[in-house]
Length: 132
Image (cartoon, rainbow, N blue to C red; front, side, top):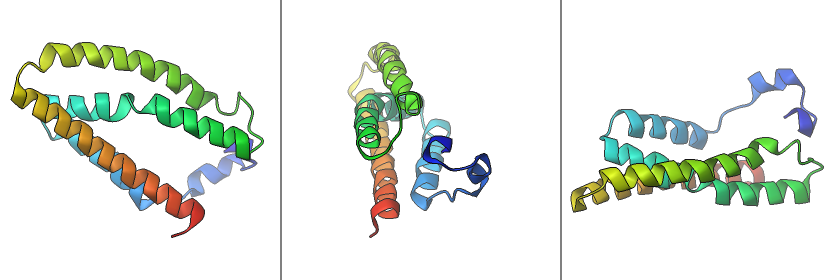
């Protein structure tokens, strides 16, 4: 936020969008209240695998439409690299634990639920930035 000209004290005044809260709370619920394979699907394919693609577009848009530097978007750049590595780890976990059709179904359900929360998050962000 500092790179966008906002002072440090602005951090405490940023209003969290309802869609952001749903995304966070939904992921907490999926990883705490469901079975292991559902949670693995939510965090592996549903979350870690999608970050590199999303953040690449986000960086491109920020660089094209703001005066942010490579250093200013470093958080996103680092996550692209890190989450590619995380995906390798998750693929190994998945291959070890998803041996049945039921297991594959639970993993898929977790991934799809995570992606549904992510869509709601991006829809809310779009609404907040561009209007209804």
